[in-house]
Image 1 (spheres, helix red, strand yellow):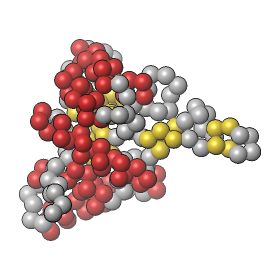
Image 2 (cartoon, rainbow, N blue to C red; image 1 turned 30 degrees about the vertical axis):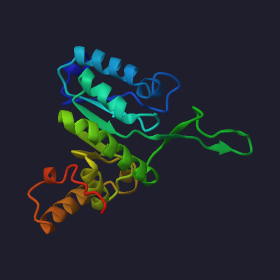
Image 3 (cartoon, rainbow, N blue to C red; image 1 turned 180 degrees about the horizontal axis):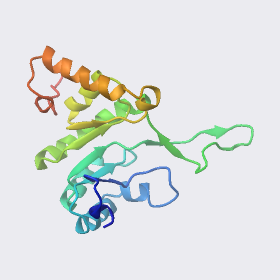
Length: 195
C-alpha cells in the first residue's frame, strides 16, 4: 500500500531471495505460495507487479503460470542460485546467513535456459520477461532477448564497469542496424531451432 502511493513506476516482488533466513525462497519455490503473494499484493496496488522467479525450484514453468494466473504483470527471471562458502580454519560458513546467492557470469547459461522455459508460458499471456543473470555485454543481452526477454537487468557487471549499460545499449543498436532489424521487439523470443 505504501508503494502504491509513491512515485515508483512498478514493484518487483522478490519472492525468491536466498539471503534471508525465512520468507525468501519459501515463497518462490512453491507455486501456490508464489501465487498467493502475487494475489495479495495485486489487491493493494495499481502499480505493475514484476515477480522475481527463483532458479532453485523444480518447475519454474508451473510457478510462472501460477503467478500469471494470480495477476503478475511481468516476470523477472532469474534470481541468484543458492550457494555457500566455507572457512576451512574455523570450519564454519563464510557468509553470515550460512548460504547466499551466486550471481554474475557463472549463472548465465542457467539463466538463459530459465528465461526460455518461462517464455514458453509467458508468451501465451503476453506477459513480459526481464531476463537477468550474468549479462555483461551486448551479445549477452541479445542472447537473453532471443531466449524471450523483453528487457534485461544488469547487476554484477556494474561493479566492474559502471558504464556497462550504455555500452550494452549501443551494442544492441549496432546489432539491429547490422541485421536490418527495426527494433528490439523483432528479436524477442526468436530463437531458431538447431537443424
